Image (cartoon, rainbow, N blue to C red; front, side, top):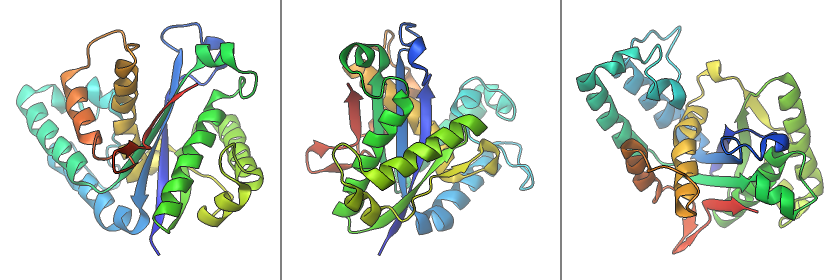
Length: 258
């Protein structure tokens, strides 16, 4: 049996009070599903090799892929200010994004519209997105007759505790469209794993990289992005079309709430 791990990254502000601010109106969680053996044998070593090829690198203190730092060429990505080096890195980077074996599920919530429509989940949109993400992940695991667990990037002691509690509650009691039995059969652990960015987890870095382009794609589809898609994001979005979880023509990899 294949054992998967879904790595979760967040884009946006989870605070419902910020929902009237156009810059903080939307929140999305992106889950990247990877065969755990593949993560160790292929994804992680190839990601480290990519870093070593293009960036200042030492195994004791490796650079961590973080989209915001990469886009703004902040250290240790400052050498990418050189146009030639940036071009070479982008080519290899996109080739790896295309070649790696993973599946993507993105859940995006319009907090303002959700506040106006629903009462439940209003205080914790992050947790509502997590429930929908887990439902779709469990459907993937059941469809592939496999098991899996979940890892998220640390967001702070209080936030991590609340998120772990919410994950455990969903695992224990079930979700809106998945019974507790289904969740407990497919998810191997009632505990959500949490790791800090500095832990250099390849799956979390991959989720960080693809989460924002996926968010932009959904917002652009609904005419809510407010600006043209950036050229690099457009290329990543093109790659994601065959990375989203799907069965035939049915795409389970994108969900816009409410």
